[in-house]
Image (cartoon, rainbow, N blue to C red; front, side):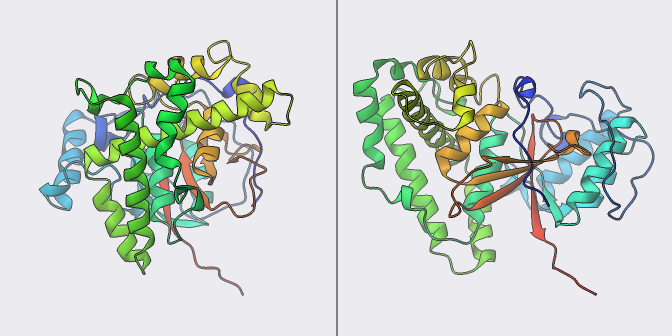
Amino acid sequence: MSRGTMPQPEAWSGASCTEKPAWEAGAAAPEGGKSAAGGPPRVAVQCPSEHEEDMYRAADEIEKEKELLIHERGSSEARLSVAPEMDIMDYCKKEWRGNTQKATCMKKGYEEVSQKFTSIRRVRGDNYCALRATLFQAMSQPAALPSWLQDPELTLLPEKLISKYSWIKQWKLGLKFEGKSKDLVDKIKESLALLRKKWASLAELRTAEARQMACDELFTNEEEEYSLYEAVKFLMLNRAIELYDDKEKGREVPFFSVLLFARDTSSDPGQLLRNHLNQVGHTGGLEQVEMFLLAYAVRHTIQVYRLSKYGTEEFVTVYPTDAPRDWPVVTLIAEDDRHYNVPVRVCEETSL
């Protein structure tokens, strides 16, 4: 499968997670008809606008599905941020039952993804979904603790940056921490320390199953989970500052960083913080160009099946396309560039 191409600039806006899965926000799924199983060759299917309306389920069916999520694994997991795995084509049949052009496009996209992965896990869609899906996939992979997390200077970063750039004091903590009096430097330091501690404990587990169970447990603890997102957002800001300074000094920088700071709303890191990073988790999610910044922050290649781009060279988009070979790869699924789910269980290779 090709590594895809960089998304077109005109598509890099409006990436908030407003379309949430039914189990999380009561957002209804299209219905009517059945999806075909199997994996036919990709054909050019022009997906319509994401605003195209489809038929929707009744409210009582939506409520039953939300209740099922709460009770299917016990009431203690009512706040599960990443739902239990489900057969990927069963999921497709459930979510895309219509015969509209968009539903057809989605079904063909899922059929192709099913050639690589057998299952899917739905991610809570609360404007943190890009961070949540990426971090969940990265931390659940059996691997050693990333070298950048082993840096003893990591937790000193907030004090160092804020002493140099006073505008960072405009940082807006996530919704879970609003109203709390904790000092900003201390909060970010604690978040970075927690990210290292949790990732290290997962890396020590010997089996993928044990690591997955521990990761599931972590993503049911809201305070810890949202603290991890503060850490990742700060790492994104740090990378943005580094890239901006390199660009100002005439050094070679990745092409996405040129586009990142070409926007009227983020001409410098200060604007990026105020107009974009501060909105993540509040009123919006990550835009497409910011997915590159996320990849650079956690030093993982992020491969996304963009189902709305099925039949085009952007169907599989990689952030970034020129990542170092030693970066691990995480794979996500996006139906509309607003919400991300995670595919799991790689299909076994078969041959005649």
